[in-house]
Length: 487
Ligand SMILES: O=C[C@H](O)[C@H](O)COP(=O)(O)O
Ligand SMILES: C=C(OP(=O)(O)O)C(=O)O
Ligand SMILES: [Mn+2]
Image (cartoon, rainbow, N blue to C red):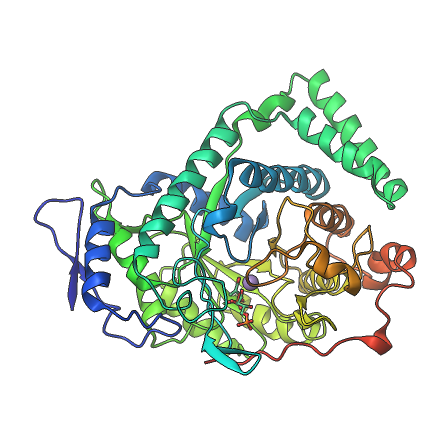
């Protein structure tokens, strides 16, 4: 058993996870270089604080109780050279805009959590990648190796963990400044949404919601409310807790309570490829007090879900555990109900969230990884439908998005098509919704609310976009879905 640095002098923390098998870890070539880096990380200040993590846990407890909705989003993979102030601001603005629409539609608080300030490591389907007859290790995120397809770039370099810390710290500073520093009032955010609507082919449909929000803002002001409330909005950060060589030295004991926290982000989640019950990740997550998520893909059985709950939330603490469901549009309606039924029968207070991205990845004819907007919306629709039918709470959405006008997913109000993908494909891993597709999603998901406790009619929900996008990617020419395999 290794020991960890503690903020309490003389107190050594038990590392019970390093001895267990850890999937998807880099093959660092030089153990001494790695050791030097982890020692430095252990001496760095925490990026987030226990009180903030506890506050998020309380907000997520409200999600689990059906009293709040989670909006979690950001890049699949942040990169060191694309975390400029402008990029981060646009991402935040997009999330704030989505949140304004969803808050109105859900009539409940929206808990805002970025996939940012730490989303630098990627699990991969295959350890190698072959291009033009050359086989190299896969890119595993800027925290591990370089994206360029050269042997040199693909060598894992532990110094990158220090850059990840610095980049996360910089992003977090920006996030704190933007969300606490009078960056945007609710009126302002609503104005941005008005601008988006004005340029959208779906403007007539969206104006109904925007007009209703106008009236709500007037009512709010008339009754003494403060739409400038967004000046000081709560915003949290999250990432996949994949690299244990990064997370372990940033795990600290809270002085007052003696509780242990991952201090690299407010919320961390375990990915679909690293949720082995006996593995190092589940063990690590069981030892920190942060609110945590677990991705659940189509192979998840109800028994596995229950065993994960026993390992990760033995005290059945509301807000502690969020299940992020990523089944795929064709499977969600069949696979989610037995999971929800068993977990509810067990009395476990998990929050249920949909990730409609990772079960819907496919290859475009150009070779780009992409996702259809309709599939993404269709999976969210299925998620709502299942929860409405069971009387449980569809607690939120977890999406890969950016505030930039990239061309990575097809469909949406502007009807991007396969030939558009090369124009501005910037993701180093999975395809993200661009700004307007993200807002399309928010306005369309808004329609799923107000159908309290009855099944959503997915055909009706998809109808408008299907009609407007008629002529886009026809089923007969659908490219194959990228097979998901585990290492
Ligand atoms: O973001 C999730 C995974 O890291 C990603 O989907 C894996 O992609 P791959 O199948 O190309 O390895
Ligand atoms: C790796 C990811 O997803 P999953 O673990 O669900 O495949 C991700 O969220 O980028
Ligand atoms: Mn991804």
